[in-house]
Amino acid sequence: MRQSRALATVCAFGTSVAGMPGDWKPWTGSPMQQAQALYVMTNDVSGNKVVSMSIGSDGSLSAGSSFATGGIGGNYVNGTTGAPHFPDALSSADAVVTAGNNVFVVNAGSNTVSMFAISPSDPTSLKMIGEPASSMGEFPTTLAASAELGCVCVGNTGATSGISCSMFSDAGLAGFDTLRPMNVGESVTPPTGPTPGFGDLLFSEDETLLIAMVKGNGTEFTGYAATFPVSASGMVGTTATMATPPGSKALFGMANIPGSSDLVYVSDAGFGGLTLNIDNLNAQPVAVTNVTGQQASCWAQVQSTRGFITDAAVNRLVEASVNTGAITTEFYPPTGLMGMTDFRISGNYLWALSASNGNYPSSIQIFDISGGPGSIKFDSVYQTGTGSNTQGMAVW
Image (tube, rainbow, N blue to C red; front, side, top):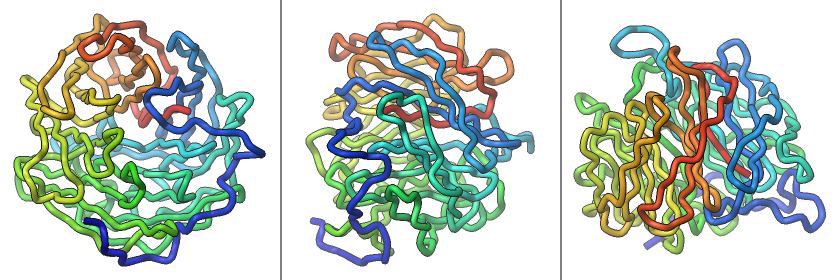
């Protein structure tokens, strides 16, 4: 039941969502709808940029443009080598998100969030709205945004860790509210990893909850899931319900399951994936996906009842049933790339980022999934022209 309403003072419904003129209807975010543009960020420590690409009707990508965010990127510190961690420099999902006619990105090295408006006539064309806004913490890594609520929330994984939320409108970000402190297992900035820390943020499908996944590290820090209530007026609560779902190890990315207000499909870097009831996080998972030979099953997306998982260290796309957890197929693309991180589904296609590890250029692998469960087909590879810190993925 969702009756608790401990409320903050921001994220009320706005009368105008940025960049939505007239009666133009933006891309809804539905994985069944064909997107027109794709966005990643360079996460460059000398100056972060959003890079846009055009999506063809056949799922192909072509060059768009790049746009400075006004902030700088960052890297986890590798816990073994002490060097900057890459690929997957932020060890998170959803460092880049879209909502309505806007793109939002984190600037981990400058503790800010930037907002861009998308041109409806050319969605590869972006315009930054206002200045980057303080994330109210340190080392922001993940975002959740809702066009309906006019609200965006950010997870900070550094020494000052927690979640903050801001309204947004045509004028830009209103400013992030007081940090909701959360223990994510880190005590320094930049954090040491790739675990622990925030894995992902997401608004539930009915937008009554803000959900957070916090990665455990398998030793001294136990990860957990947390939910904050969101009121009918769009206010995000300050008091969270927290629990470690039975059997979970390193909760990471997640996606809503269509048609359900209380179920999400979650990747777990310890074994694969699981379907959780966010109204009862202490309950046994609804379904569990055990992926043999996995090393870092960190990202999850859903199309209908099909759950997909990618692994940063294994170049394999796993498809499973979100209802049973049973694996439908394990697909190994013939590309020779090391692995896949953030990815998105739209219409008949799936795009997965393979950031450079120094031995190959950052690329996006494209898959045709139009044939239904178990039908994954490799389509092509597109080189992004970005570096090893490339992070996040969103579509519009």
